[in-house]
Length: 155
Image (tube, rainbow, N blue to C red; front, side, top):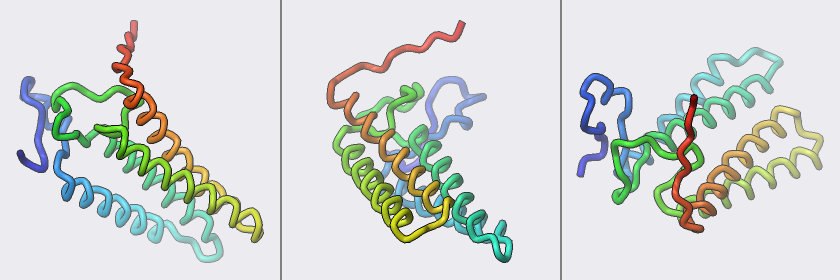
């Protein structure tokens, strides 16, 4: 098993759908995403406007997580087909842990920002973390219930 694979089949578009399967490669992907977010946020920093940095970092990290959910595959998960829109993990346990941590952290950060008169950007970032956590929890609840992915037809 390799850390980074592409689905077999249409060779012309296989490079557009890479898959990340190993745990170390997934960790590296998340670390790189966080670093990219920090670099972009610092590059966009304007003196006297720290909120812009917080919002940009939250948006970049959220986008990186969503893209990662599309790229990551469990060892027992099919590589070629795309994941269902709601599926964030290969197994429910991972989503319960990640989602629980993100919802708790987002909620705690929101309460802390509200009680201390924190900025709206801090509330936004905590809301983004909680929303990502809720998506992970939703995914795990569906996986735990054994619901097969619904087919979406675009006509």
